[in-house]
Image 1: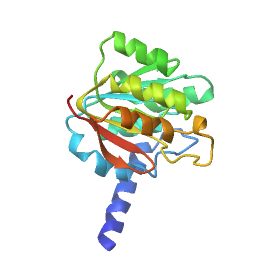
Image 2: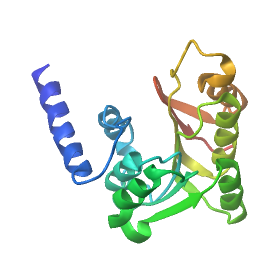
Image 3: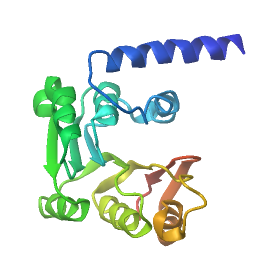
Length: 197
């Protein structure tokens, strides 16, 4: 148990360095970075194109850019309000490695499809309404390369809400429709690898 505690402490210190000097008001990411590091270590060096749906202040985008050190990220969000300025400040140091697409995810996913964009890793963390999540998952899946990984957030979020206001029903239907989606983790988040069809 002492070894695990030391590993966790080292990882937390490393992540604190990643976020040092940034301007975040919320931390929905910090508790997940250790599991992300373990879960995605096998794709760390081969991931060069990342898509993030739902970027808010940019905390997860900062993590992905640091973890996938050679990657470029496309961040999709409405980008409105004062948190957008924090996003811009937090990601400014990454320059051309960041592409910001402002607007609804359905519009942005359509733009990326028209561009024939392909991604190695996709993080779906936008709306938490069932129908929106389903649209995000279906649209993102078409942009994910064979062998790529898609991570869907907040699977267990608000379990007592009506189905229309939850992520889980959309993810469950998505998985039922896509047997080629190999589940590699299913907890608060669901990670899948796209097997060739």
